[in-house]
Length: 185
Image 1 (cartoon, helix red, strand yellow):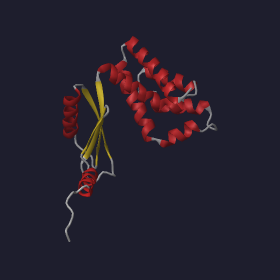
Image 2: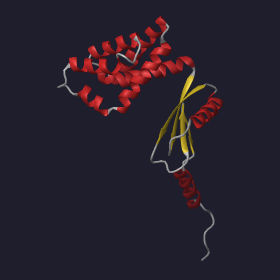
Image 3: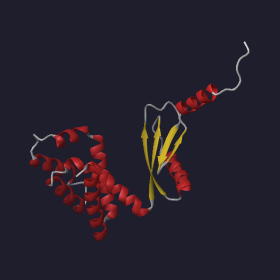
Image 4: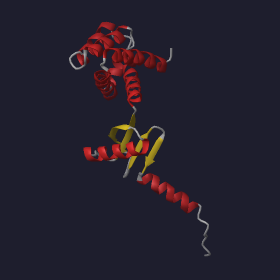
């Protein structure tokens, strides 16, 4: 079974459980936490892919990381996934759950990349603009991309607004290379 199907099947099961118990919002917050923890800690990936690390140790790590910070339903789910030896897939499962949650609520995820940290007002403004264009509620994921010299990039659905200086310079180069006027010198 490929990873995508694993992510989808486990996330769908959790999504249906959350819907049955009326805890979808709580589980969504828990899955955001799980996704952040696994995204920010490369060491977890190394530990969970290492076959020399005993299963009991992996269960203990997941318990130490999440037992006090997530709801009972999420905690039981995390322990179930760990016991099924799918701990390495937790990041993908949590991301897939969040995608399902957003889709069910009509929320679009907008990714904002800038050259520096932006304040909450800018994030709110970008969310409002994307909401106006998409006609949906918006969740903005803002992050710093050091490769951006100036400007920003916003991606949502299959759209991208690119105002980076690098893109503007590339457009100018293209326009100058297509210049119809040649020097008479």
